[in-house]
Image (tube, rainbow, N blue to C red; front, side):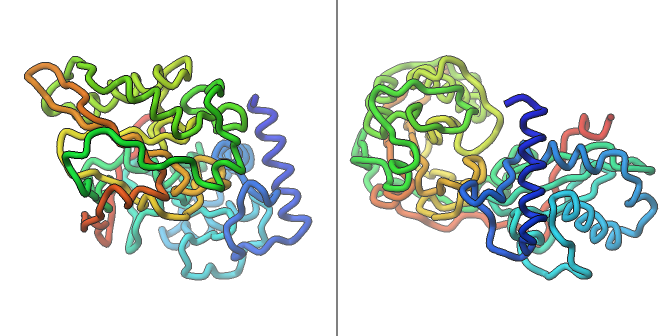
Length: 348
């Protein structure tokens, strides 16, 4: 959708929230409710309403934080409380936390990062709000340089020698009801929303990706784990017929097919911020699908000098993940997480 259309719809949502007096502390909205903002709608509406405002100039940090939340509430159609409850997220119905930043050092105190929460970041100059960014919790890992956001949960395959396997005979009931997957769908861009008629069934995803087993690829380097994963991600997009490759750092990697791609040179699988079997609403899919609906394509490979070869593939829904894997303890977040946001955000 064009920017004017996105903004117009966001304003319709705001008007509905205001007209019906929706309580800020209600359960998080989903796309079915009529009160749900997509990340793009959130960002565009808040930019339109808040950029240029000077309300935060010169305020102490704590006061600035409360005023920032009040501004965001008003912009989204909510009646801001006199004092904000200590709940998580601080604005529950839109599922957002608000940060007012004059520098790129984002600090998150005394709470774990929530994969499905939306983090609203107000970019400040000394005088006014100069920009607004909205980032899903699952996407904050791209700004983490310590690795603490990417390895909260870990797992390993129960039988390391089992070879390739399709764990899930069919997609989850919720996935089928929402998206009507088929063997002859025409997939959209990897970063587009999944749509009915455009999503491949889990069995078809397996058959298409299984053809990668036995293939050898140029290795970008022993310490280039992310770039090595991109090689496989790009190939998976081609095999699934998305027509192009795109990666915006979100979860799951191939949003239009709800496929998360992992390349394993070791047995330990890093699962990120949510267990695959979780029924947490998936923010990247506008809250109408859950983490357990995601299809996990886990490629195992052997590395040889300047190349690596795919040796097997495990494909499973999140719901069935622990039929094939066992969970074990991983890292957890510290009391304070420090993330480096892009410098370009502060150069306007």
